[in-house]
Image (cartoon, rainbow, N blue to C red; front, side, top):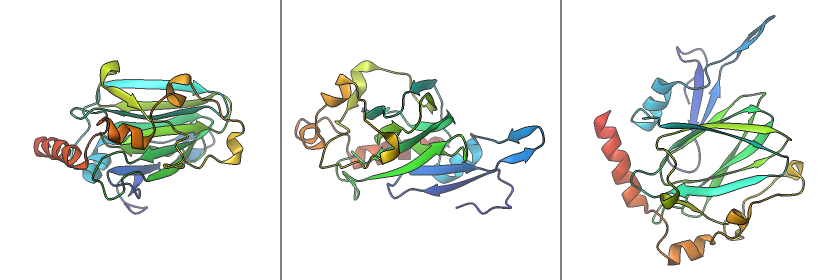
Amino acid sequence: MIPPGSIYHVQIRELSIRDSFEITPIQRADDRGVFLEWYRFDVLEEAVGHSLDLKQANTSVSKRGVVRGIHFADIPPGQAKFVTVTYGAVIDYVVDVRVGSPTFGQWDSVRLDDVDRRAIYLAEGLGHAFVSLSDNATVSYLVTDSYNASREHAIDPLDPDIALVFPDEAGELLLSSKDTDAPTLAEALASGLLPTFADAHSFYASLDAKA
């Protein structure tokens, strides 16, 4: 983690899923309000090994209990994501769906809200999901490729083998039919739908070489 008091205005730490990071901005408050840098390309580049070539910005607004995900895109080029919350709160999940990864099928999570104003970065090939903890939870994310329906995939977020833990604070869960009808991780693996850890890291290395 980059220590407080450094020249940077954010702190960053790697999550238990390799190639994903939690980013915590240093908020500077006075009698007018608060200022923070919610995205710093240079700090993230230092951690990831390359800068992000951002192609699209998305925002979703969700009722309490809404679950979105688990979503991922084919590699290459995949879709790396930098995710934050501008209003309300969510639990954001990174799920390792890369076949051959030491943490395949495992996940980590970060609470994103409008208090600590953290963000999360996940590299191409990782699965992403979140559950809303408040009404009108507003999630905004920067991505490295534009949406391509033919290359986007989903895994059932209620898959018991993945076993995402949804806090009581979320209340009754609300999911789209697209997500509940999605295959389980085992079914996606059997059908050859999942990216491999080797292909993902080969692609990351190609990006690092351009840095």
